Length: 99
Length: 171
Image 1 (cartoon, each protein chain N blue to C red):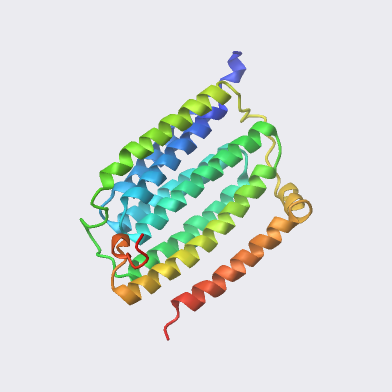
Image 2 (image 1 turned 180 degrees about the horizontal axis):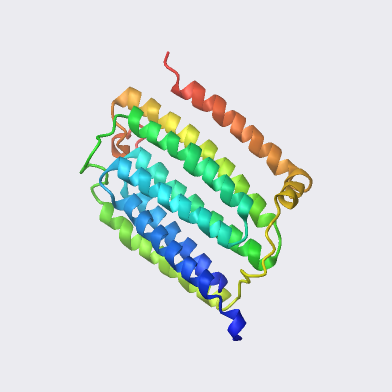
């Protein structure tokens, strides 16, 4: 098998995730797209891991899984807070910071 | 290429898993039903876990199933529930200029695929003789050379737990 098979699959999933982050308005859907992006990175790390015969890729994939869990926890807490204050989680209505 | 270099079973498995993952990933970003999107994300995570087993990383695959499919998806479904998302079809999930995301994603994909084919054109991946990454070896790496990032990760998780409680509690 070619290492590119895995890397290109990772690239496709990454781009689908980027499209989701750009196109979605619902904050929970944006968080789901971010999970897609993190997963594609993990596939890349493990493919390089097998290619180079080490184990460092597995270690960092595990760290990424841990960071992703923390990110989802804090992200969803923020989404809940926004929902409680504004009764909506549409990201285009959050314009207080004039972004 | 020798006949023994062609690993038919692994290639067929990879093809099926990749097709399922891409299909369900497209459903995650295009579905107009929040719960369907979350369940499609489960399929993508499961496909990733299957790929990790194909890449001889069993421990990461098991962790993926436990953490992502077990914990993160429950969090997502709670998030959907607590923000009282419309169950069923919701036409208002996309930005009004969502179509601008398509050329951006396609351009990014084109650049990345070009760079990958240019840089790693025919580097082989030996999936048959890949020694199964033993969990003991991974733990040896985590707890001796990479102990510092492990501590940092522990603090990040602690801060995330406290932050999530502080943010989400009512008062």
